[in-house]
Length: 313
Length: 280
Image (cartoon, rainbow over all chains, first blue to last red):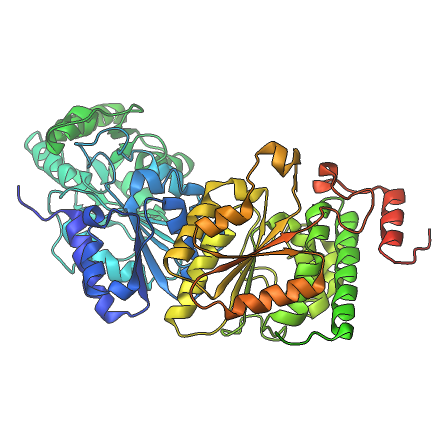
């Protein structure tokens, strides 16, 4: 499948948007050839700052640039930004309320050749817990590009999670998109598949297969993990009576965690979580096969769907 | 160098004395805070807020104001003292310091205290944030300066040196750091806990202009800050040799007074030594 990588769509969109908004400045940590912030760098060398392999410093320098009136997009690997630089993000971005946009690339297990040191399977848990943070996870390349202007024009800290790879395309470029509003991609009555990021396309495929078994699955994309579209989640739980969550992230603290929190307080229904089950995934040769091996296969979604429907009775 | 009249020096010395008195009173009333590092920085704060910085207390958000970042945020009391003395907010608000409904936090919060340019408290951030701010000023063709007051203990952390590298790479001459080199941290002398000397050699090697002064000598503080304004090709750090707990004999050079609170008798003695008349 030769769909555009999410990072490339993001990188090109950032460079395009740089033409429209002179307040955008971009920082990277010697990974611009990987995050593809280098598209912006080549168009706007005076608004691009490479601070070396030093994520904590990049966050703080960006906070200073924001204090000085700019809108910085910082680029690096999600694993390092959300762990090594988490204190800087908490203190100088969230607590100090600086208008810094964190483009966290190579998210999930998308850097399959580098392996567990570079995987980012807890980043959403880490940043979701920070007061004042908005957390966004695009489902495909088109959506990654569409988020750039929306994130730039939103006032406040944003964590935008970008995959190194492509994902099964589910959106047309420029389709309606709003921070904090989930998207129903397919209607259904028997259960709701709540999906995020690269798992949205896989859930759509699972829903197709489930329909041949007479199971009518709704597919709900949650791109904004925080603030969560609680209303839509509760409504789906109430209307379909069962939930499967699916994410390229640990089952702890990410989408599955967030949905469980909301539903157990408001609309308890049987729920199953598809995700990485609390272990360090191995290095792979091919991302699709690695995802399948790490519990993220279409079949895993189908299995969880059958299980959760059985629990309804 | 401009001639610095003796009465100006005397005036700034008196303000430094008052900043010490205020700092101790704030900390004593609240029953918590960090006296040692507030006392060591009193002359530096006096000169910055009452002689050097281009600020207007009636316009704390003024775009062209000079910026100050208290990287050693534990010394919040001396910053609050300078801001109240300078008129950014009434000193009476500090009577409530530490209460839940007091806007002024344990450590500086830019969103809650007028005149605080950046939130701080967890150590190490000032140089890197200051570098970003100085970079923004240059790109926007603004002539404001950014000052960072840095602790020697916090300079044991790597983020300080990451920020130093950024400021040197981009030749941020509009960034001036002052190292409050009192050589005392929570667990003991800095040179024993984790020796970092030579500060001057380290900062020179990072590509900064380095000045070394006595941080309690008003003339030296003023002249070094004026000199830094004339350096046009690199950031400047002023290594200010200071005494932790300066001005209160029993606090001087004692790590105990990094974060402990005087009792009533100690407070009385401290205020007397600082030239305040107390009524028992």
